[in-house]
Length: 247
Ligand SMILES: Nc1ncnc2c1ncn2[C@@H]1O[C@H](COP(=O)(O)OP(=O)(O)O)[C@@H](O)[C@H]1O
Ligand SMILES: [Mg+2]
Image (tube, rainbow, N blue to C red):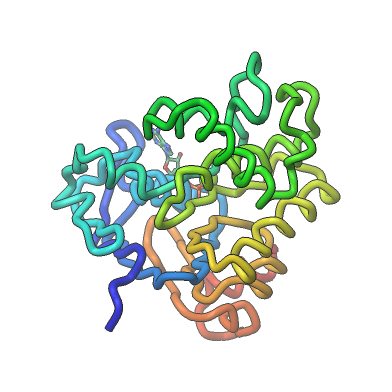
């Protein structure tokens, strides 16, 4: 059996003030596949992604990225190369306002990987190209549409060549037209480029078209797992039925 890109076992987390948010979540994401997280608002999708992205320590559980232990019984590895192996795209892209799209994307290759400025820029150009944003390289964030900003943020994550790209509702701040533009890019990265992704999304059309596996979260637990066919089922689980009916 090949090593999965990402494997999480028994992830649990409580917030100090609000209590339990994740209970015993386990998942396995094979290389070159797309794993979707679906579930109502508040079900724990963002918290799970932040744990998988090594941004939030879980209280318990372990996470392996490409077979390397990144979180062991709740403790996050400090090893930088493990941290770099997960890329994250958030709901709201947070680009540096005073830098061009190209400079935003070239920053980490230069500062973190230590590439010289030309090499960092070259690498940033090819990442921008992958999200069809090379023509926007010289624009500052305020000169971009919301969808273009999000594509630049995707390029900024891709430029580090992560083992897995984690996307937290990447289009929930966008109107339907811009949503289509961003989801089309993610779909292309998934289907054509074979990028390994975990995507929390309400976009069930995207899940149906691009996801190889799906987890349905409810109240911090992975309540149902399966392929995208899960979306077409009725009567397997009351909560899933309710969720699908509302979506
Ligand atoms: N930083 C935080 N501190 C305390 N509670 C939080 C924090 N972030 C999220 N929560 C709570 O955890 C639960 C799950 O939230 P979240 O992971 O954001 O779910 P989703 O992304 O599915 O909407 C919610 O009840 C939310 O209020
Ligand atoms: Mg969320």
